Image (cartoon, rainbow, N blue to C red; front, side, top):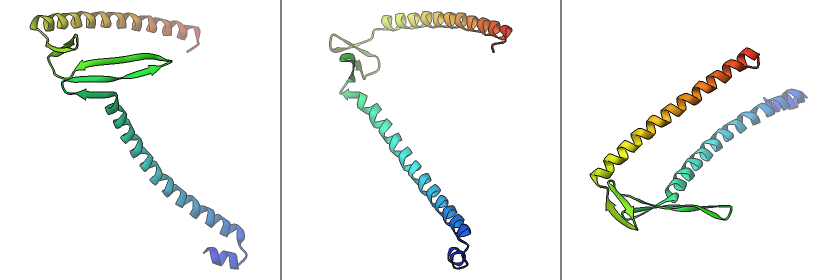
Length: 136
């Protein structure tokens, strides 16, 4: 193929065949490298998530994050369900506290829903005005 074109002084065709072969080889190599890079990125993401939370027995320590010279978070949380940290010690969450938390969360959900519906209504109104003006 290539050699025959070169011997017959068809350099243009030989050049085209060489470039086509190189392109196909490069595509195969690039595909293989993309797979390797994707696998490495997935492994790094998993290690970062694990590195941010350190489990120390029954307590989880969420690592310190420093931005601009200030400590953003240094939080200790309970690793045991039904327990909370109070003054550095694990305490059981009482039934009354659980009921209160449930009520507070329910009230907060209702408030979030109402505020969201208000903002959606305003967004819809503004989009309608923009459409009437011919902007959108």
